[in-house]
Length: 137
Image (cartoon, rainbow, N blue to C red; front, side):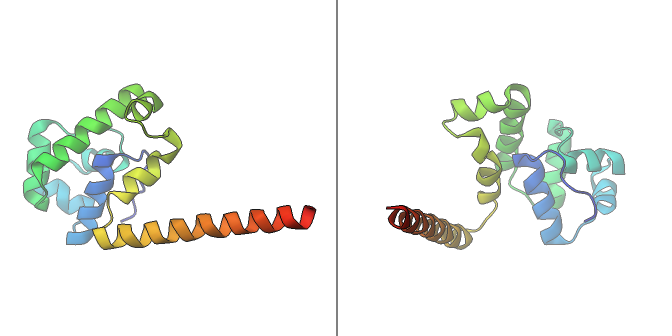
């Protein structure tokens, strides 16, 4: 898909993922859900969020869970309106927001692998820092 996400959001990240999974192009999706290519492009790029009726058509066309996608849209509305404050209220460091959004797109198995790699990275960092301290002493 040539369109790149401009604004990372829960909704558009899942939309792009699902379009890729089922092999649907933005032009094909636009035709299937009675939107223009430009409207689909804006949804993909995170420049806008879908109306309830558009969301319903998208979910039907892409066989997406409507409840999950509505929750994603609502989260994005809050983030778009309040920015970092929304993340802070949810108890998440705003700098971690992209990782949080991407992590939710992974399967349970992939999440487990990511946790393993993160732990290994942190342990390697601790070891390197300890070696530096020992060399300085």
